[in-house]
Image (cartoon, rainbow, N blue to C red; front, side, top):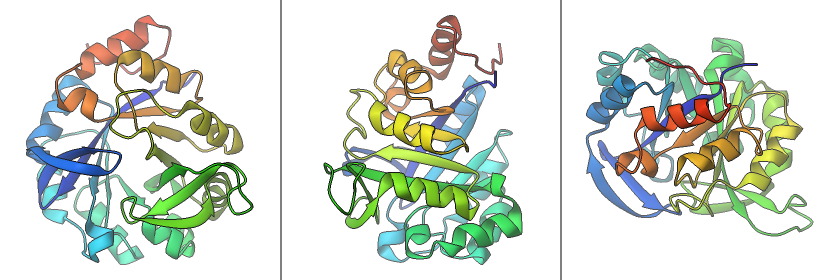
Amino acid sequence: MLSRRLIVCLDVRDGRLTKGVRFAGNRDIGDPVESAERYYQEGVDEIVFYDITASAEGRGLFLDVARAVAERIFIPFSLGGGIASVKDMRAALLAGAEKISINSAAVKNPSLITEGARAFGSQAVVVGMDVLKTGQSAAAPSGYEIVIHGGRKRTGLDALAWAKQCQSLGAGEICLNSIDADGTGDGYELNLTRMVADAVTIPVIASGGAGKPEHLRAALTEGGASAALVASIVHYGQYSIRECKAYLQDSGVKMRTVW
């Protein structure tokens, strides 16, 4: 059995680490580079950085953060927000990221997924999916809809259909974020996670809602996710990376350990 991964999400706005609830009410909680180094030292498997307003504001990449992080940590990290072309992808990878995450740009231009996979390999292309539970409709028969621009714009695109399309276009991984659960601490959206994990063969990262280690175990077992993404649970000191990984290991979830 492959080891499951624990990933920390660092949302960045104006060069600072920020966190909100359901994509709203964000507040400054520190320096992203220093936070990345701390989580690396605690044993996290990967880190993902999102510039949460880059797409909505039409801005480019925050490469200065990526370069600074690459000098301090030696685990994979991905960069997302403001990536709209193969040129942007190349810049992110050259700045030190192992993966790039595309979200709004992929919805607007699905061929970007294929172009990125051909240029850098599928393993470097992560498609981020921000998903809103809407109830079943003709447009979204799964009951879940894709939203873009940091949750600001609904698309009418069915989440399950989009996940399958992303895989067929060459994505190497899907980061599945529930807007309804994001930042609540009430647990991941397990129905959505299991639905997507069963529909694709590429790794699915569960994102949005972790409040305690039990939620991580549920996402990795009941939800069928290959990795669990956390933010508030570690940002606010409720649990450490080591505590989360130790709990998962003791619960029978195979994890990469560093102690």
